[in-house]
Length: 333
Image 1 (spheres, rainbow, N blue to C red):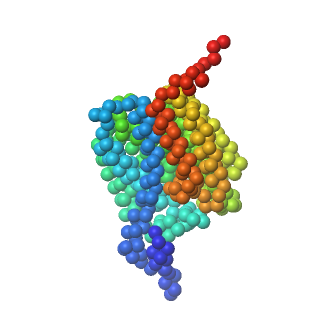
Image 2: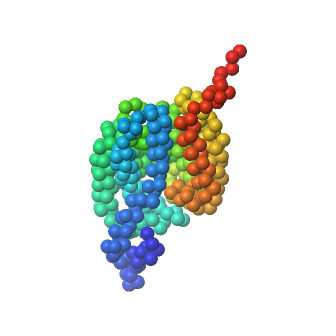
Image 3: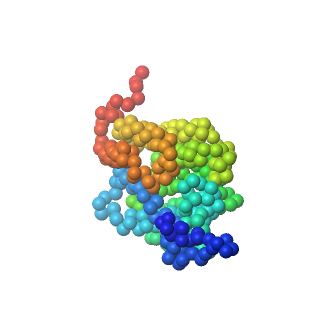
């Protein structure tokens, strides 16, 4: 949404202080904006599920079909956009208290609520119809992704207002996306639990740092609590403590997966640790990309390490190195 459009929509008549009607073109752009299509970059989180399924299940070339992957990506995008619309609608009063989110279309009064709720449901219906074409298990995981958006945003549950539960429930989208990626490749078996747990805790690590960065930038505890209710029982110290917990759990679960399924991945640990350390440092920057993951591409050093780490992991998933198994074999007493 351009600043010019926002200004044109919130002009106030000097005689009575009433807001002028929002032009149709401005409102239309606002309804497109609340879908947050730029956040579609988060579909990258589908990739680990696809890659691990290809590496562990190893379907034959004749069994691998591209159409379920293409349709699946579109379905996930629509489900995610549906959740973003709901989030924007219900968070508008709180976003007005945030130094940057106050410029969001709903916070600026550019959204027609009735049309937005119809938009929310319509995208869910189309997304689920496409998900059903991929397969039953994929559709169930897609439905769970949409349901988590409701649990996170809608009262009386609205888990985004509950300390710690806000991070844990929002980050469940990570293993759900991994499941969705997995079921684009195979509908026959389920992925390793250790891998799903590691992906969940890694998501909690990133989300915990997002909360820390937001809390730190707002500055005052009172202002933070006005913006986000879950901040009532947070502090910088408790947020960083939770981040250490999430990181430890993620690496423990990843270690279990490595030992059980692919010992070669142990060679990727230093690169994963470096990536997590760089992200930790990023969260201390003002208006950090840690608060806006869709803008992480603007961090060239981080993206370089992330891409290199992904490449290393893909190679290690598909190359057998017996020497690694011998080095880390149990010691015989």
